[in-house]
Image (tube, rainbow, N blue to C red; front, side, top):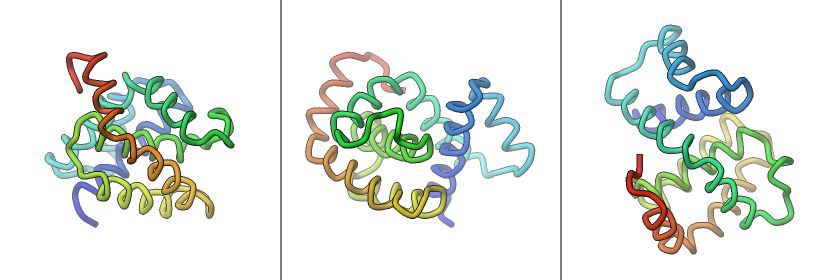
Length: 148
C-alpha cells in the first residue's frame, strides 16, 4: 500500500473514533501508532488530514448535506462522512491532491472500510462536489486565514 493511501486510512480511523468517542484526536493517533508504528512521513500526512478536517467538520458536513440531498446528514455513516470529508479537504481546502486522485483514493477507502454501497455513494457525492471545487476553495479561503 502506498504511504499516502495508508496515511488516509490511518486518518480515517482516527476521525471515525473521534466522531464516536469524542476522545482527543492526538491521543487516538498516539494509541494507533503504539499498536502499529508507522513511517514519519506517513504519520505527518495523516496528522495534516486530521488537523485539517476536524476544525472544518461542520462546514464540510454542510457541503456534504447540500450534495447528498436524499440522505440526511445524520443518516450517512460516520465512515462515509469521514471519507468524503478527507477527500473534500484534500482537493478543496489544502489543495494537496488533484480532484481525480482524491476521489479515487476516497472510493478505495470506501471499498476497504465502508459498506457495499459506500463506494458508489462516496463517488457520487464527491463527483457532485468536484464540479464546485473552485467555489468551495474560495469559500474556505475567504472564511479562514489558516488552512490547516
